[in-house]
Length: 78
Length: 152
Image (cartoon, rainbow over all chains, first blue to last red; front, top):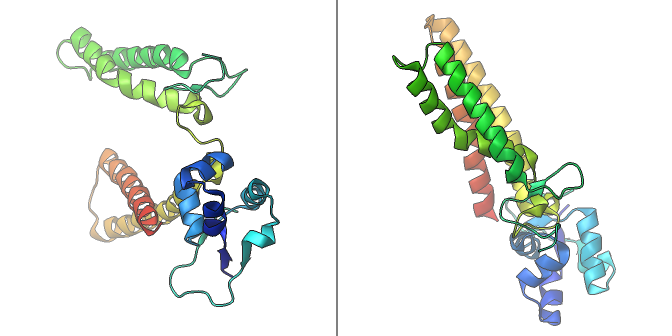
């Protein structure tokens, strides 16, 4: 199952750069880029930290994608 | 600077983590390099002048051995510019996937090479076979990592 997310919109809403969000999460900027593009599904601890950073529930940020795009699936950090 | 501030070479991963990794790695690398130089001289592998040859072996191997010891000792989170949780970053996932693929590639290569040698009866020196195996593993993990990075 693929997962889509609203991370890019949330981050822009906060006026944060990808680098700023990466620093908040303790991961690399490339990790934020890959999550936003839907190419990397974060581990559960990282998803919880993302939710905490934005003061949301995980399901507010991540949701199952009912219509996944063809091509290689996302890698997972679990 | 505080003891827990990130540094260029980082600090050791054991104890209370305040000792700079290079403080241990450089002397250990020097001792290992000296041992290698003495070993080469005693084994007659240091050329016609064992003292000079052994010293050259020690000198050339010092940086590499220091680097190896440093890589073993350092806590990567104490390096300047390091992320707090590298294990949760996408690069870590890429590397794990590349290493898994490289293992398969290496075993496949070794099996095919073994079959070819068994059929042809060719005699390959051990050092050549081991070098080829290590090269296949390194190239495989490097290429796989670069491809994963390009895919993003």
